[in-house]
Each structure stands twice: as structure tokens, then as C-alpha cells.
Length: 526
Ligand code: AMP
Image 1 (cartoon, rainbow, N blue to C red):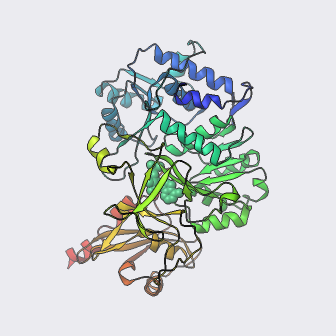
Image 2 (image 1 turned 135 degrees about the vertical axis):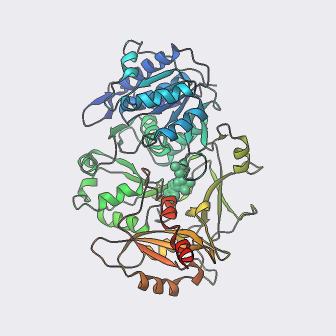
Image 3 (image 1 turned 90 degrees about the vertical axis):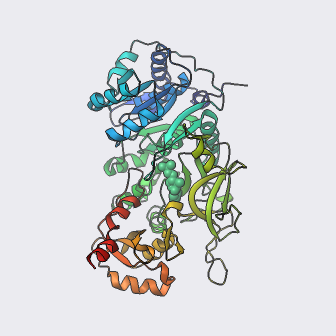
């Protein structure tokens, strides 16, 4: 059997001509040779440290081509890569370092003093810096290292990375992903999305997350395709580079921002082959406006840190239509089912818990055997924590309201977002979709907040379209005619924008906190 190291797999996709450009940034270009040689230098540096097999390397640095090469070096050296969100502050980083006990920590020079002291407390003596421009102690030391390195032999189940879940409540958990979890998914996506050597990927996502680090970067590397590598989403740069690109991956916010600019036209997308969206739900309205403006149908897919990609709308039109509001079918090799709270599989149209199985699904949470056991069924299905439905929603008389094949999944929300009001279950997404369809509404978020009578009360936070008036009372009255009374928000707040994290996810925990006193204060006052 060959080497199961993920780098060996990715390298097998590099083009024959290694002097071709692999990465272009606004300042520089990097060839495939550069990627191979620079990752080899870092790997040689790590080899010189004589670390134990399976040692962790924690990295909190700005996105740069060097940072990608550092990730590849970790793979090549058999180290377990632990990317950290650049937004994490001291208390958060302290938790990750204490939990993962890395042997090496890489940070930006600006954070060195506090990161170094945290690292030391966590028992880590090797702390280096890497800057956005590629400078720093790590790259300086690597300069004198040999540019050749024999990638270490890895087994498929050796760990390649630990991704800490963004966990908005409770302790963040480290999802352990193996070389074969990541490799299997990369191969599947290469095939399913038709990656080609002449693709040009517009890469604007952060690389501390599954979307930018695995889905996007692995895709381009394995296809031997060029990447336009930008530090983050920037409208001007996106407009500048789109005409040269054939692929773009984004969170829904990127597409909303592109559409908000008149310069984003069909002509600009002349070379584009595929726009992909994920990490958060894409509004059907964005999906439709995008189609109208560009002639392109965004392909929405669904996945998570623990599993990489799970489902995708079809790429090939012979495989079916891309349907807005759905996340498509289980990818080849992946199984998806929707079950009730007792674990019984539900029929199409019914809403329940999404469970998955496949070669891409992680082996468990780092040093949390109990939690791992809880999150898997005895027969090996992973409980995603997402609530969803296969096929179309059903009307009161049991008929599907839309023409959606029974194997297409729609995500309705997170199980922890479920609102229970007066004993009734309310799925926020259902109400959000109704509200979003109302005139003058740009988007909305529905949450549950403590209520003295109902346990929880439904609250809708609504963003009106710029320049448009929305009347909360009229909206409430209209909702009463559209959904069951217990689902109608007891309070509608109008705001200019919803709080979002870097991956475009609406921070419902922030909203729940903002509105938690709505009834509390009334009862206190009374
Ligand atoms: P993360 O582990 O940070 O990637 O977050 C994974 C979660 O993001 C999933 O469990 C879903 O709740 C959500 N998610 C990812 N893709 C989509 C999508 N296309 N539509 C709706 N939710 C999504």
C-alpha cells in the first residue's frame, strides 16, 4: 500500500510542469516548486526538533501563501495541525493550548508576548512567528534548511488535523480528522465538482476553517489548478480578479455583497465555471438574484468541521437540478438520514435530526471519549446536531409543497436553536423563511428567549431592505394568517444588520443575549 499521507495525495495532483504558477497574490506569484520546496524547508526545521510522532502544531497567523505551506509542512512531517481563528483572544487561545498541548506554536509577532507566555504555561517550548508578508522567525530559520524532504509515511487513520468547533455554547471540542478523512473527501469533491487543471480558484476564505483550508485549498492543489490567493473577502479585489477566475467558494455573505454592487455583472463572470456556497444557509432570494444577474446557479453544499463535506447540489446537470434552499444530495460514499428523537428514520418531508456516515467522518473529539460516544449512534452514525428534512416540505394535507427529489436535504436549523414555546417545537428557519418572503424584508433571525408563561417565547429580529419601511405590527398580523399561532413571534425587533461571525453564520447566541430580558424586565417591573 502507498503512503496514506495527505500531502502525497495532494502532490499526485500537482502538474507535470512544476515551474507553472500555483498561487498568485496581488504582490507575488509562487510556483508548484515553491510550494514543494518551502514546505520541505519547514518540514526539515520540524524534523530537527525531534518531536514525537503525533505532536500537535498550533497555528494562529494571518492568511498568506506561507501559512498554507506551513500547513503542508505539518502534513509532510506527520504533525497534527491545529489552526486557530485569528479573532481568538487570550482566554480562548489559553483554552486551546492547554487542551491540545501542542509541541510547537506559531503566531504573529504582534501577539508573541502573550502567546509565548500561554504556550510556556501549557508546556510548549517551541514558539515561532509568521507574518502576513511571509516574514517572521519561522521563515527566517527555514531559509537555511534543505529544500527537499521525503514526506513521512502515514497510515490512513493517523491524525492530520484537529479543528476546534466554533461552539457558541459550552466547551469548544477538537474534531480529530485523519489523513484518510481529508483525502477521501478531497478525491470525492475533485470528481463531483469536476475540478480541472486549468481551473483558477478565487480563494478569499480564511484558512483556519474547514471551508478555506480543506475544501478550497485541497481542491485546487489536488487538481493542480492555480489559486488567486487573497487575504480575505474584499469587494474591490473580488471584482478585479473575477474575470480571470473559473471557480469561487464563498460564504453567503460574499454573494450578498457582490450582488449589492452594480459593477458585479454577467460579463465579469465570463470565465466562471462554478460558484459554490456553504458554511451558512444561502437565502433563496440570494440564489435567485444571483441567477438573474449572472446567469450562474450557485451550487450550495453542506458540511462541518467534524465531517468535511457531506452533501452537495449537483454540478453536472445530468445529475439533477441545483435547488435553492436545499443543500443537495449525499456525496458519493456518504450516507445521510433524518431521524426522530428516538433514532427512527423519518419519511421524506418530515423534519428531524440529521445523521451521517462515511469515510470523511471524523473519529471523535480530542480527549473527550464521553462526548464522542454521545455524538455517535451504536451503529456508527454521527449526530450532526443539525435539523433537516429530505425532500420537500409537506402541506397540511400531506402533499409536497415544492418539487424537490426525496434525496435532497434541506437544513432547517441547529437542534440547539430549536425553540420550545408552551410545549410546542418551533424551527426558526421555518418562520425566517416566511418573514424573508415579506415585502421590504432583507433577512431575519428567529430566536427563543425566556418567557414567564411559555418557557420560551419566539422573537424575530428583522433587517429591512435599505430605504424601505417595515411595520412590525403589520408583520405580526400577517404572520398570524400564515403560521400556527404558537409560532408567531411575540416580539419583532427591527435592526440594521444581524451579528455574524467570520464564516457568515448569524450569531444567535448574541441575539439571545441581547433580547433575553424582554419579558424578564416586564415581570420584574410588574
Ligand atoms: P463548521 O463546523 O464551523 O463548519 O459549522 C458547521 C455547521 O454550519 C453545520 O453543522 C451547519 O449547521 C452549518 N452549515 C454548513 N453549511 C451549511 C449550509 N449550506 N446551509 C446551512 N447550514 C450550513
